[in-house]
Length: 183
Image (tube, rainbow, N blue to C red; front, side, top):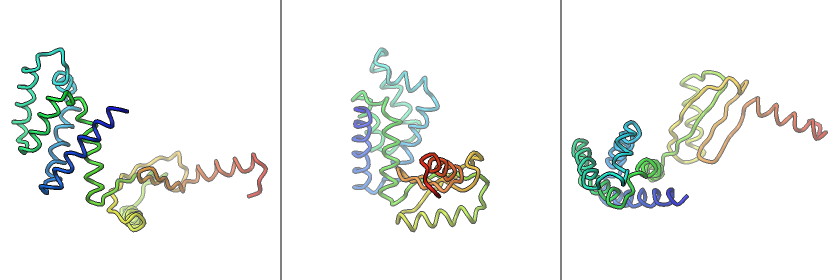
């Protein structure tokens, strides 16, 4: 839990800098790129974060990576600060928090839509527009299929779950019958 608090703190600090200099989108892309590299190149990430290796050698490797990625001055400084404070291992978590905070700043919310059958592009757009109108935010919708739902859809926006699936309705009906309630 402490690690998440640390990651959130660094993400908020970077977001504040981005708000001040108007470069939030650039920092978002750069941080996303470095985080993706660390996920894809797990051995490299572990080596850079491992205190058993010589600190100066790890620093040189990390600096050369930053140079090759052509990072902005602010992002280069931010990444080197993470290295110097021993927080490079939190980079992926920092990125996750930063992406969420940047979305919130832009008025964007991510949502997932799970349906029993493949939905048409028109239906998906109608659902996205309705969610957008309901939340007052631009909705980025991730669509999946799950035949186990039998029918209907389940939508998640953050902690809010809108479950209109037949499977859930049948489960609720079964529970009502168990309790002896009439439908």
